[in-house]
Image 1 (cartoon, rainbow, N blue to C red):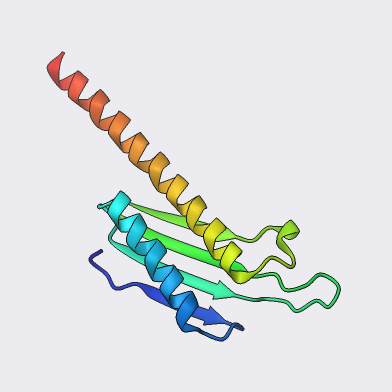
Image 2: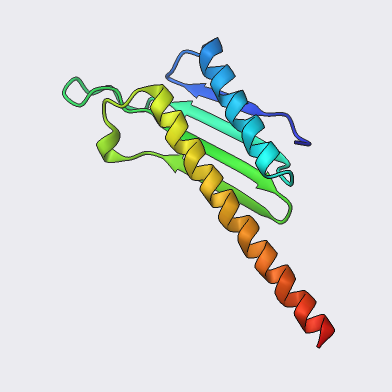
Length: 118
């Protein structure tokens, strides 16, 4: 990555294990998708409901050449889900979106090459 990783916590105390988990997942993304330029992760706990448990939201913004991939993990059925699971689900979704983007770019480049040879 060309830009430094940014991690912000909102209404959630920062912790070394969470930082390590996020950094590990970003490193995995940058190995699988070498065109990744930058990443900004926001971990937040917007509401505290006694009846519904603690719902965490994880927002990931990935910058790749010519595009920005944004992922928000905020499911209503995730109430009570722990922070580690929310981070895992958000990064899994980000990885899927990056894979789709890479697949689209690959298809477009193949179509462009075919047009150039015709």
